[in-house]
Image (cartoon, rainbow, N blue to C red; front, side, top):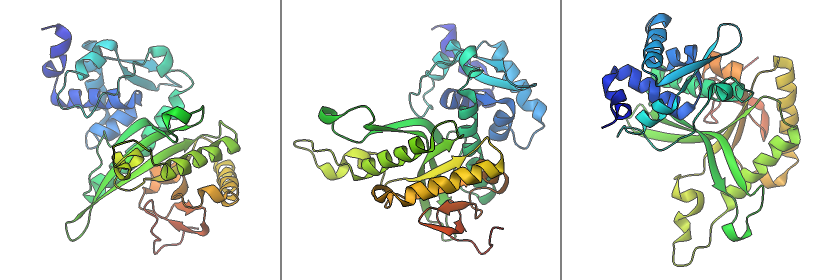
Length: 301
């Protein structure tokens, strides 16, 4: 047996859990690792765990702005995680130091901040959404392979799964596609992605000899996930203006009116959590809702 295959078992359990998070989420800052895995400990504890991983040669970091450290798995670390029987799925995407510090890092970190907001909410409410509760870049075709062209695949920035425990002890499993918008693409391009989600919702593959009622997206989800659009990394006034413009374009598009779509700001999500009235439904933009589309007693000012 090679040294690489025994690395996870030679490390503390917490260090192995951090490796799994780095494997699934590609790049995490030191603070994000702390919020996911050691929220009740001093921040120096998560730094020691990451230092242990670096000493073992399974993780490394690239310097970010200021003193920010952007952590990722080395090839040895990726190989080690893939020997774990507990890993949820194969999500191999080797990240280099250049990529970890490159232009896509801000997008990846922001998507991870969205996931962390839900992890924090689950902890506070006794629900289930852990460090592996979201998956990056989930792709689905919107047409048959025979007729498929460029643009006939929708790739969500992430898919979030959250299990809510109700007062009567029944469970509600909620899934949402996450779109993270940093105002780096034209607004029209963002809204065109909503079109692809709408086509995915309506798409039922015709496969000879198969029950089409359980194919397409239905093979993966009991109900079609709604879409949470999170705006980030600009000043608040600019983000609110972009959100209002998104609402206007969405309302003018009859093809996407049946799509469950909620829009909100990352700053609000991180500060108040997903169960606060911080989201807007473009079909009824006068009232703020929580992430499940429920109105709250409070009125957001």
